[in-house]
Image (cartoon, rainbow, N blue to C red; front, side):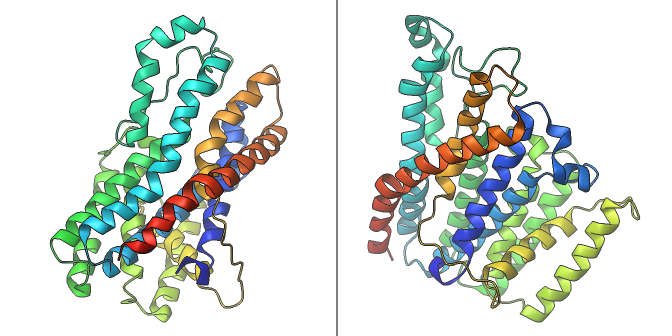
Length: 340
């Protein structure tokens, strides 16, 4: 499925967008981030990247759920995609990167409870951000060892929601599925407007990302025609422009969910733009880059330029991501073909 479209390219592009914003934030120049300035503080490059990630995931995961015969097989497929690489990056973090980078004595590092609590991150359900003595210098603009991992919990929550819809027999009943997903999207946006968030970091608008995932579930049903989708894209885009330019002051959030979702959809299936990539290093880039960015910022005595930080970090994480894909993710995914 994914090789007949641009989804792999979009996911890699999304991971790079997140890395750009993190380089600005880590080097202490968050407010200088180009898209943040261009949109008058409404969006970062990472905002676009996360919207792309969650729409793509919602589309492909929902399509998989609709065509998978067993909910158990569905869970196994999801586990094979998320956990092998996550487990490896957590083990490397705790037992290799941590001991090498900590400012603590090695015995103090391993006797600190937070070292062992970090292993819970491998579950995806309890994300930890502190490794004792690692990247804790006050000169760091951002604290925490791997700030990118926060979104994995939300991803798993969405997988669980799709699993419940499968159990209820709704994934293959398009009209009922669409009614439920639309209702949930509206509910999530209302909860977001009220400031009610489901996971750790509310500044990431995670309920809007959850809505974007569900919108991907709607689009995979092909219930909405391309013509109507194009109209929705144009209208939502105009609303976004009006919001950014302060022509309107009401921020209902639905416009950005629809716009970024449909923009991703049309690029993914574009007839005039085609970049087929079989090697999907996006997950590896996403989970490895943040600590590498922190490391280089520290290595350059906390005075590294944003562009140098981004370039060096992306080169290193790209290499690690390729190894992760080749020797961890791709072998694990071979088992998915046996699950239908």
